[in-house]
Length: 122
Image (cartoon, rainbow, N blue to C red; front, side):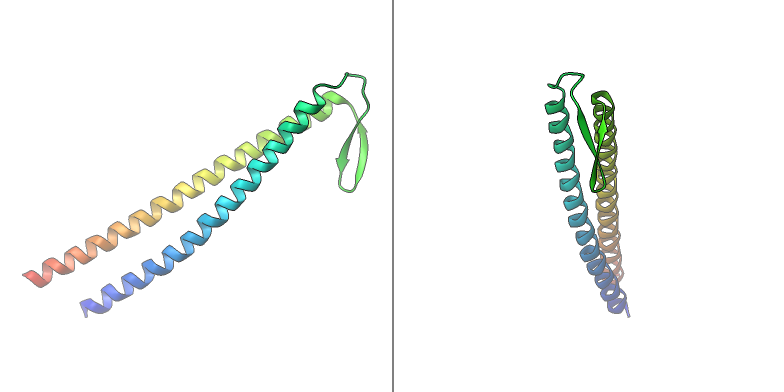
């Protein structure tokens, strides 16, 4: 009977580990994409900061370009960069939570194995 309990616990852990690994890969991919977006926003901001204040600039809205002012465009880029940084921080928190959860499950499985081992020895 104890073997069935251990087998079930190992199976659950294996499935959870596979699922967690998939989630971690997705989070890593998402974080990489967000970092690329952040780099694009920063590069764009550095390029337009070299322009004169009276230069006509166009902001993208969907498939079209709308005439905008330089300060407005820079503030939009700054807002987008801050939003991306928040999303990266959230990805890090999610990754940390998944890793902690996986370690806790592994530890509980170790305790179960040790407990069964001690019961057999008695």
